[in-house]
Length: 221
Image 1 (cartoon, helix red, strand yellow):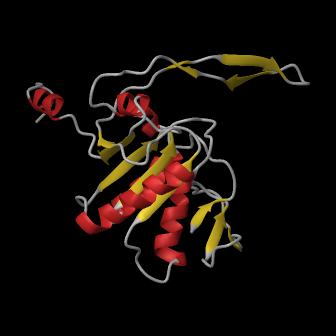
Image 2 (cartoon, helix red, strand yellow):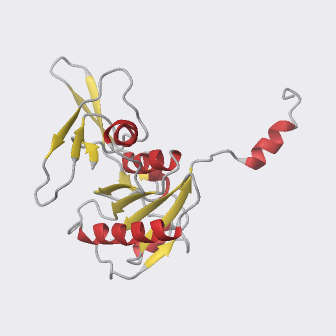
């Protein structure tokens, strides 16, 4: 295990470049594993583990369980998804697991779903460069698991403006999610019905139709 030593929410795919990364062995009660607490980002953790800390290449990379959903376009901001993406970039089957609630009743459901999907992923395989983004509802029945597409999750951004002791303004971002897209087949819709959503993600972001259009511009050769 190699994980950040503290909260790293919404850090996306940041890497630590201008300062050292520190890693310390820690004990996990009831588990006999090497566990490293790392001062860097989730993506740092996977890079460091694969290239320095692990004695051999792993069969799978599991990121999470994250407290709170990583649905729809939230994957762009997610450090948990970034960690799994690093595993996929290295050609290793990788899964990001999150609870579908910011205040989950427990993490057992998400851990169980993650373990089940890990076993099936190793057994059946997924294409190189692809990761699975998994969101698990609180009231999952232990059976309903659905392949889904990435939806859109938007927020009503609220900036709480305050003043520091020197009279300078500063802001807290306090956005609340708006009503999610509940189109059939989307991750947001599946979770709303109590199913685990499993979305295959590939970080090939080129828009082919626009690329074809750009080739017709006079300025492009």
